[in-house]
Length: 74
Image (tube, rainbow, N blue to C red; front, side, top):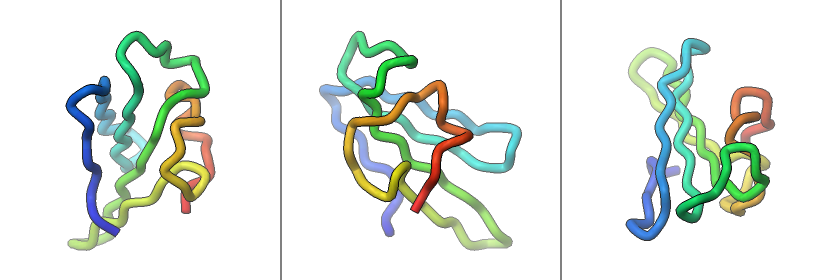
């Protein structure tokens, strides 16, 4: 799975979290981080391998950025 892609018309957030993962969020400008309107991708690193997975296993704009660390990724 390729790394994150960003739409220039969207707001992007990148969080290199202390849990060892990096989270990438995309949403329309003005979207609250508490709104269920974010596309979220997580990058995990194991050795030299990077794995990218989407929240809920899909590319939908239906997740809450504030909940990124507790979401299921596939």
